[in-house]
Length: 162
Image 1: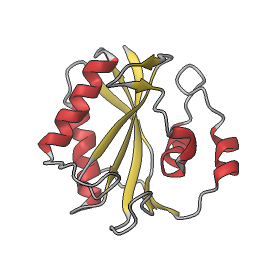
Image 2: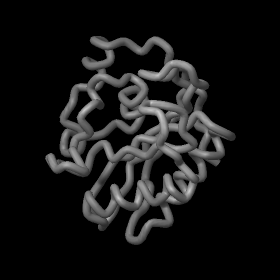
Image 3: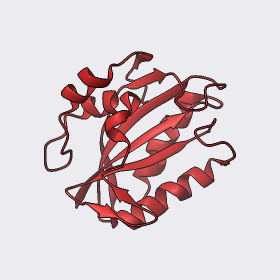
């Protein structure tokens, strides 16, 4: 079993329910088990600003799926939630990003690991910090990155997983 981290976000519909259902869907993947869930955070949109606040979280899971298969499964879960991609960084019912897959470094047209924008996104780093990842999964000094970019616009909602 390999460890992987998925970043989750939503800003359409029942946000808490969307994230809770996403965790359940991840747990239903073959040979995959969610082992830790960060708190949920309400965050301001980035890029396209004319939209509702987001709810973000991260999950640590163990899986036997390959990185590409796990990415495909995440895209399938998004499709199952009826995610429609119309506006870059726009509103979404569910966004699942494969952030890390153990110590894998991958750079292909469809998958880059670690996720290329982690270090500039406090809405990802703050929930990542909750997971207390070891260096075998996360190569970054998260507290240092957060000191550099700040945490403005990120509000802890709490442990919302049912």
